[in-house]
Image: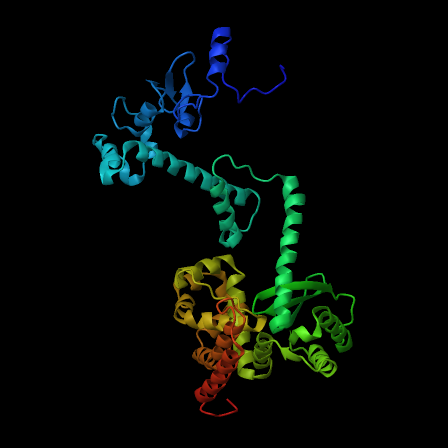
Amino acid sequence: MSGEDNSNSSPSVGDSTNTLKSQNTTSRVLRRNARGNRSDIAWKHEVAVDGTRKIQCKYCQKVVTGGTYRLKHHLAGTNKDVEPCIASNSFLSEEEQPKVGEKRKGVENLFRRKGISTQATINNMFKKGIKEEANQAIARCFYNNAIPFNVARSDEYFEMFELVAKHGPGVKPPSYHEIKVKYLKEEVKLTNARLEEHKAEWKKVGCTIMTDGWTDKRGMTILNFLVHSPKGIVFLKSIDASHIAKTADRIFKMIYDVVEEIGEDNVVQVVTDNASNFKVAGEMLMEKRKKLYWTPCVAHCIDLILEEFEKKIPIHADTIYKGRKITTFIYGRTSLISLLQQHTKVRDLVRPGLTRFATSYLTLGCLNENRTSLIRMFTSAEWKATKFVRTHDGRLVEDVVLDKEFWKNVVFVLKGTFLLMKVLHLVDSDDYEKPPMGLIYEATDQAKEKIQSIYNGVEDR
């Protein structure tokens, strides 16, 4: 029928005799480099010349007689039975490019070294080009669809390409509908199957229920519940607590229901933050459930210690205030950022921490590391030439940076907090996947002993 797509059929010659011959040879396998067999990669670099066995180079328009064998030698510039392509250098790496005035023998040597055949080396060159083209297409997919670059570090990313490579040429990606419906249903089944494996582990060795709450910019409060066991962490559920009074009784009820869902016999402990309402709820839970324990989050406890330092120890409060004054003054003015980068060699003064109060002390650490650069900046001719040197804030910041007592206080403050920051990093980072409880207690005890030693046992310090 005229409406059918015959793009994949062999070309018709319109002659009945030839048609009959074509029918008699349909069972024959076409040679790899025959024009009817497009599996040879070289065909993408030629332009067919109608009615002849000749092919035209896609890059220099030279007409070559023969199949892919001569075309490849033409493109590679081997001077074997065919003139080299004047554009063939585009297929070579920088090391393989002929130097000015040098003959093309460098390309010939490329095919002779290490006993590699000319045909195999030419094929490798084409494959290298296709690999770069494929990599660029993959990267473009990330860019155009705003896919986070961290996806390229995931296990699923590498697994996907390994399975595609095993399939070989001609693999077709799943359609929009298949991803949205078919494979989504399959993934839900697989996830539920994996969840059953975790539940079996909970019954066997017990588990820990963890809760983490956060509030977004709109004031919505979300409580996340997760379950941890030696097999790993499972996200259980999220509860919108925006309209729930955050009293100890309400929090106790939510945690109590989750314990019921998991099974009291399977729960060893419940971990929450150390806020007063959660603390009371935890005590109520242990009173009601005699077989489990409530444990405050270590990271939150250390963050509360750092908060106490900043708010209740005058030297900490004053030093952090002055340090914050320096960073906000500089980073609020573009010209000063440029001046800062000249003196610090593009090093930042603000380092985000694992928690809000940890950030304050990490920033003091950055200021201390860049102390010499900051002093040099605020005594430079460039700083004296700016309009900010005559402002109130400018004079204030300059005085702080040039004050020896300020830097002395920075060192004093960091001595007492650096060791706690190390413990915080231990318990709240990905570097230690499963820190044992004994390790946490030992690290905490060592920090306390070293802090006591640093201040010579003087409690007031």
